[in-house]
Image (tube, rainbow, N blue to C red; front, side, top):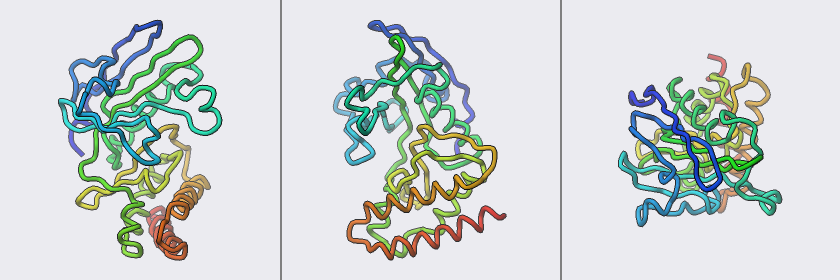
Length: 249
């Protein structure tokens, strides 16, 4: 990973339209940040909505001064979204979802784990609730593991992914939603795990590691398309064997 993963952060307070909050950002990429960075309209034609399940109408590919990035506004799913789709109960700044994810990803990068580079995170509070957004550097020419499975089926890099996931688990990093679309491969077949919202560090590896793999298998089966369930299960056996062998080292 490049040296920018150790660049210091800066914090800028925000006061706008009855809301107050802050932006934290990587000073290795920006000297100054403002709330316009989190508005897709700021990028004009250089902002493209992310399609598919991962986008949920709240993520955009954007072109910024430092390069390509993904802008994501935090949105609720399920029935609670009918009440409020973008507001969360306020506790404190550090536990706000965007700020937590920003710092969590930086911690992973300091451990040389393959995650995208977080650029900046914003939180805006009004009363008891807050809104949040995050800007993350985009991985060039990336495809989801789901796409790779659809193309390569049995020859997909099951074992390599198992070892990669184990590296995170040995570092005690628990992904909250490791599905087949939150795993990306670049043009050199390097694997990255993305979307670390609500992730946490555990005291030790444990049964939660099994839960992460089971969640991944469920997503692969759910969105398997023309790939047989037997093929998914066989691939997951390879993945689990590689994962468990790596955990024992």
